Length: 300
Image 1 (cartoon, rainbow, N blue to C red):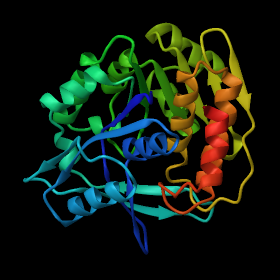
Image 2 (image 1 turned 30 degrees about the vertical axis):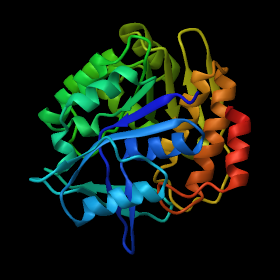
Image 3 (image 1 turned 45 degrees about the vertical axis):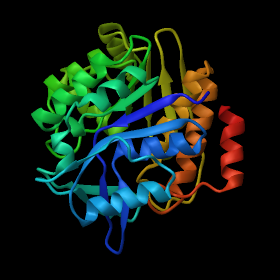
Image 4 (image 1 turned 120 degrees about the vertical axis):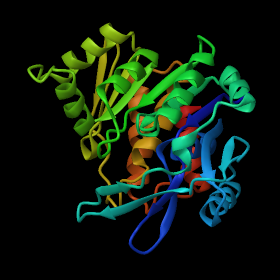
């Protein structure tokens, strides 16, 4: 039976210079989870507006359920202005006071939290007190056996050390990129600890985290647990843009983790999928049958 895997937090439109794409890390994550054969679900909130309706229509076309998308009559659907540099790296301007800043823990969400096998959450959606409290309580309602994946997202000024620490205390798995690792090291006054593995082990020991995943773009990834680590060099591709690549990586890695795979197996599948997504345009590229078979064979 497929695992029930929830991405909770922001759902929005990534607005590019000449187009817009469905986005938000939890939504991207749930999309790839679904495409890899699991029950990927999104818990978020959109406005009672045209862009909100477009999100619901897009979810349907992508094969994703909108059952846990709340409709907000007072706040507009979230948008992010995205610019891609010459190296394919995105720069984001995240608009404030939008629907996903007002997530509510209703009865349907409480039941979802109780049934979830995995919950993926981030720091961005906790920028408002309302959504912060909702996400924390959602995680606390979940079963003790549920895997809680913190995909840290240190954008603009939408984070604080207090929220980061509270999130680390709730997390089973921490996923972050090399820039976020540097920011976290400085925020936590570990700037003298230059060794990435040693710093990650400090986090594992202090917060009881089971696995830390450090992504490094074209240089692959570093997966670390309490007793071992695996350094993967990555796969070389022609980069179109990197939006969504990290979320694809997380989806593949989590499914491997659920299957009890080794750090090396997790790294291989996650890097392969993340690299492929970075060679495509937009955060939720269609996975054709050959791509699906490749990753289902690697992951299943």
